[in-house]
Length: 82
Image 1 (cartoon, rainbow, N blue to C red):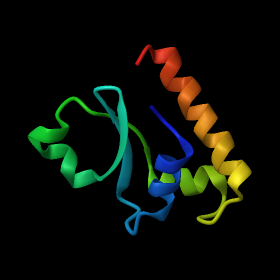
Image 2 (cartoon, rainbow, N blue to C red; image 1 turned 90 degrees about the vertical axis):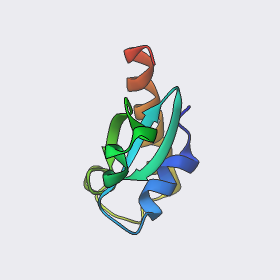
Image 3 (cartoon, rainbow, N blue to C red; image 1 turned 60 degrees about the vertical axis):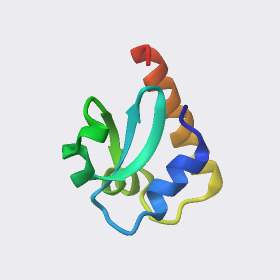
Image 4 (tube, rainbow, N blue to C red; image 1 turned 180 degrees about the vertical axis):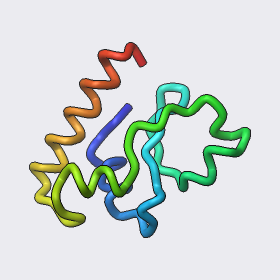
């Protein structure tokens, strides 16, 4: 569901407006404006790129830090029952 690749994809997004969403059990990175489309109706926004960078303290974190955030996100989503 949420893996390091999708978290890294969010970090690598060119816009701070990019968000990590969960839709039908699948995590994906989209531009926030896409959330207004029918394709993303019902998507749960987990984190924006800006929030992720703030949480990590840098836009270029160590791999271990990306792994730590990924595990935290996975745990939080798991507790929601998604």
